[in-house]
Image 1 (cartoon, rainbow, N blue to C red):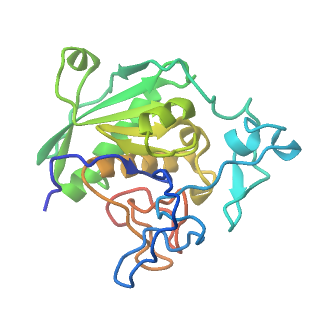
Image 2 (image 1 turned 180 degrees about the horizontal axis):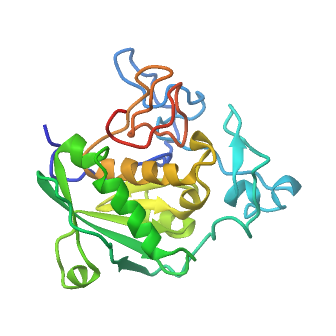
Length: 274
């Protein structure tokens, strides 16, 4: 059955968290599924993300050092430590752009799939230093690939061009690449803390930091992580919630928060199973 056409409200994507309540929440019932069973008990919500990276000499002396912008390893207690691949801000992702979002063209023929039409734009914040054509091509590949949501949910993705968008055309999902700073604003009230992505309103907000650096779950394969990043957040827009690893050693479900933990599964960026 196809998901409901009404998009959900703000949803923590691959790591975002809702504002933390002051009181400790009640323990889960045995019949109540936990999104992330490997999260430590002091993090009260299954959507929670790792704490902010530390400051100090190990990470450049400030929160803008490698622990925040570059690639660092997460300890089991969700603190941060620099890894061998940890990079400086000069080789990492910029913390902010201009704040202006523009719709970019998507090259290529229209989808030949049949099913419920889902209209989407690809949008990029100015000042990020990325090639908008490459971003658009990556998003198109994720959405139109036979392993994607078109096959899984029997939908047909139709791109809305910049001219159509400016003229007021209907857009169901806005796939938006944004700086960490703008991501935090677009995802509010969810707490992305400049580190992770989210779904909010009609936007699949892709955090530039993750787009550039990937995540330990996918190792050095940043291109593969980007496919997961797109499919996970768009999945929320199609009405899907978070899932957990079905069985240790098997490919992860795309709606797992693979940025946080694989839960014993193997990284997998596609909605359909291999």
